[in-house]
Amino acid sequence: MQDDTISGIRSFESAGDYVRRMVQPEQITKYLPPGGHFIDEAAINSALKTAAAHPNDVAQVRAIIAKSRAIETLTLAETATLLYVTDPELRAEMEEAALAIKRAVYDNRIVTFAPLYTSNLCVNRCAYCGFKADNTQQVRRKLSMAEIRNEALVLAGRLGHKRLIAVYGEHPDTSTEYIAETIQTVYATQTKSRTGATLGIRRVNVNAAPLPVEDLRVLKSVGIGTFQVFQETYHRETYQRLHPAGTVKGHYDWRTTCMHRSLEAGADDVGLGVLFGLYDWRFEVLAVLAHSRDLEAQFGIGPHTISFPRMEPASGTDVPTSSPYRVSDDDFQKIMTVTRLAVPYTGMIVTCRETAAVRDRAVLKAGVTQMDASSNIAIGGYKEFAMESQQEMHRQQFVLADTRSLEELIRDLGKMGIITSFCTAGYRCGRTGGCIMDALKTGKEGKFCKVNAVLTFREWLDDFASPETRAICDPVLERELKAIASELPLFYPAVKESYDKIVAGERDLFF
Image (cartoon, rainbow, N blue to C red; front, top):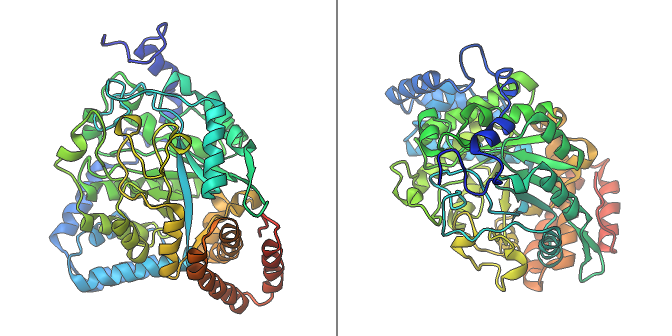
């Protein structure tokens, strides 16, 4: 491979030309402070050093927890203090507060989704990724619109999903136009349930490469939900070592400013995340917080979601298993707990990368709000694989650890007394962006979410659940309906009317 060429780039375009076409400097500098960056490594390191010298200050930790309970974003220094808590009693208080905050903001529910990987074509050479361009073990493929439709039919018709996160590599053949067409195809795909109800995907969130503002406006026009871009690592030296120069992914400032461009382009919501295990996890937590605070400062809203991917084995690389920064299960739990306290309004996503045990604990002790299930991340895997749990390393980005079906996850959540939400009403009612941030911080959104969660859960149970699942989940759902009657007595008659209509066969009713 020549130095100026990336495997998979069209023959008439060099790597340098592709980078120059994609990266637009004027869409970077406008969001950066003069001579610096909103990810201030010196400030982060100083906060960590100070906190490490004074761990487990009971009065200080409890004051910080109280601020979190008031749904206020923490500072770097406050968050660093929580990161160095080792006292078991204080740690338990943090976990108790995290769950209380989650219930106050999002109520007693977990939102479910599925990933839809559309392609494993990629021009980048990220050292830890199975999709990297120079991984000759990876079997390359891009789904056609007919194949996208087949995947959507399985996800909506057989599994019962209502929302997806569509995932795209960075490559000329998966351009903005391709992303927009796949979203339109998913929305247009409909089927019937066993009860005769019309089924389809109601919300497509997107995880893709950073794009210029003009391209992001195109995606906004076709109805994307949250636009996710994970930074992988915020530590600049590590980032540059893992993402070779001469690739689009190698441009740190282009990637870190993508969420700013997304909000400028009118995106309803944006999602942040790092790949834990590439660098020191305490640094990364503070960097995500710094990114969140800068979005709040510049746009008045922070991230709608923060995700917690942790490195898993992948084809063509040993970085996930050999990295000196691998994160233990206990530290991973602390990462999520502290993030819930640091950015109390945000949604938190933990995916099937993690084991069932790790994810269950994240629900009960970290205030996680979203989880995927029945996930298959092989390209075309939903339609082609006989079993939902089947995996082929050389057709996917990494290996999944939790292979529970959606119904199994719903049953497990029901045993915890938690309802599963398939709600997408906020997007269609305009409760997004700054509107939802205000509602989340005051607890108002949680009430709407409970109502819509109850309605959508009733839909799913009637259309997909086995008798065993109904026996576990129906009582939980009835309890939540009674809670609505108690908490929202004037609103309850309208809710009950919609609930009864759903029982009678109507679908997609929401407030």
